[in-house]
Amino acid sequence: MRRDRLHALAIVAAALLTAACASSEEWATWKEHPSHFASGEHLAFSIRNRSGAPTRVTREDIALARSQGWWGKPITVSTEQILEK
Amino acid sequence: MRSRLLAGAAAVALPLLFTAAGVISGAVAAPADRALLPLDQYTSEKGRELGRKYAEELRALASGIYHCLPWLEVTEHSLGFYRPKHLGGGDSRYLSMRVFIEQEASPDFARLTVANQAAAMYARYVAALLKRMARSQALTADPGVEGFTIILEWLKQSVRAASDRPIHETVAVFVDKASALDFLAGRITPRALADRADIRLWDGETSLENLRLTRLPEDDFVSTYRMKNYQLDPGVTCP
Image (cartoon, rainbow over all chains, first blue to last red; front, top):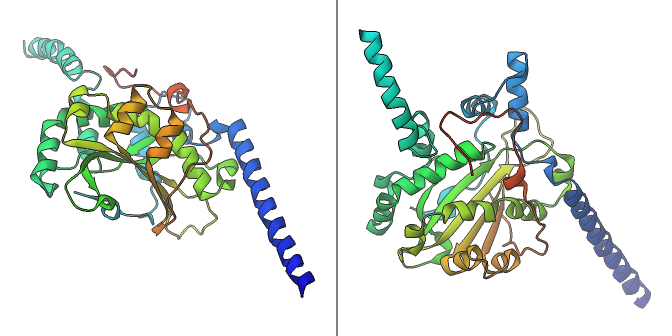
């Protein structure tokens, strides 16, 4: 009985340690490559591909590319759940 | 004669158009206007009055983000003096803004937990946006403005069928005015600001527990990143 409890405790401890390590790894990767996400570069890329040769991209081009890339109403929390007018 | 008149009018009007609007040309007023909460939608006179009084500041804020941080999209009607729901009674008005962050799919980012993704987004955007929101001294000194709300959302990276609706992850950050001003004046650290802020998190429509930022990576992306081949509209300058 006591051995079973110790066994269960060991499993829980191992799981917690694994989760902590994974989290540290995630953060190490994130810190090394912070610019791998969050840019509009792909929007500019799609505009360039559409028009052929590399061109200057204006804000209007980006707005257009974004509207064309929009694919349906997203599932997200509504502003009304967070704020009142 | 007519063409000379038109040329003359353009010579006078165009510089006026560009300089009168400061950093923003008249041709792009519409996106800024779309961002603002219309005055007739405020539910209290206090909110409406703030919206009316600082309309130009809000337009300048929306236009600045539109041009200078083009990978961000201020959600329609999200910019205004809203009342945070969790504050309960009273009519505490916070300058609020909801922003969608356009980003490339990234395995590194996808591997982070939702909480760590939110922490990364917080580190990247909250201070930068707060500085922009508090740029007007008149606005920050107004006793009717009691704080700031910044809502960030981004597309959840997950495997899904083409027919599936996209899911957004959302973090809402509420900062009372005293804390915001302390931070902006350098009296408290980004870490202390994060500790004082009320940070809430959603996965799609599902509310997750409030976020306590255990790690706050330094991130100067907003001030250093330049989108390749991006050309500012004529007359627009970005600090």
